Image (cartoon, rainbow, N blue to C red; front, side):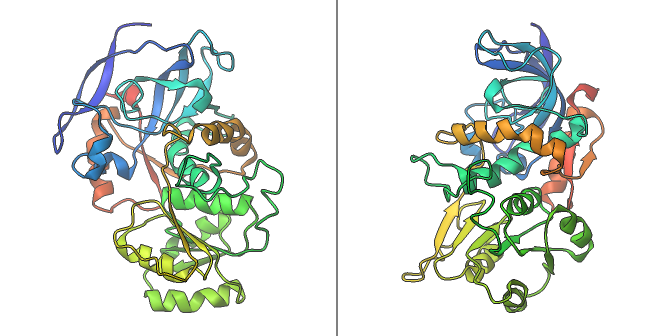
Length: 353
């Protein structure tokens, strides 16, 4: 397939988002070309405009987008697992051939999962980055990676029994990553699973596997006082901070028991580790494309269709933006302003005017 397509470009650092034309790329031997039906917006997409995350951008104009779902349009010569017409979900990456803010993109076949009958394209697009952020933080076994706990994954022997009955505390349960952290904790049989969120999200988060939802507006002192009551006095050896702003990082570290582990999804703003407390601080690199993440990413995608079909992993709730790619800049502004809660914003590139 050849020709041009519509794409959303970031014109320069601190520049504007503009819909323009891009060539439709040709797949390499291990790639597939995907017609993108749905793409999800992530906080990273507004942060790369003008922040330390701008270093991810190789050149301008740049096509962002790290979550996608669509239909296989063409396959590389070595691809045997997919054929034209297959419906798949997949992660985008930081180059113009693999970004998902366009109508067609490339993706390595190994980083794809077929979409089961019970999941829509819009829902499927909410899964890749958020789920991988959790899975890679916990289960990546690559010895070269320093951003993983190397826990036994749920697809390996002992992965669903090793942590049975041990409490987990997840800060920011209604965020996209927080929702997947709750579900992975449930899959690993952590118990109880405690999370912070606004009270109106309580029923929803319990449906994902949370056993207790603590009002996120409470003071750190009040939350820390509540945790031992909810764990039955068991020490919190596992804390996952799905927000990782300065205040939540402090809460996460304080909540972690001596010898326990806390995971941040963003870099530490202020180093909190104290000598002699035995606590481990880990920060995830959430893309399966990053060096050292590929094998764990492939293993996750090998199980993902089954997880979705059986309801082991449930997608985020979604809100579809109007006007395809042209609606993304407004959506990113809403994310930056903190106006999105409990849902994943979705754009449909094929509906671009």
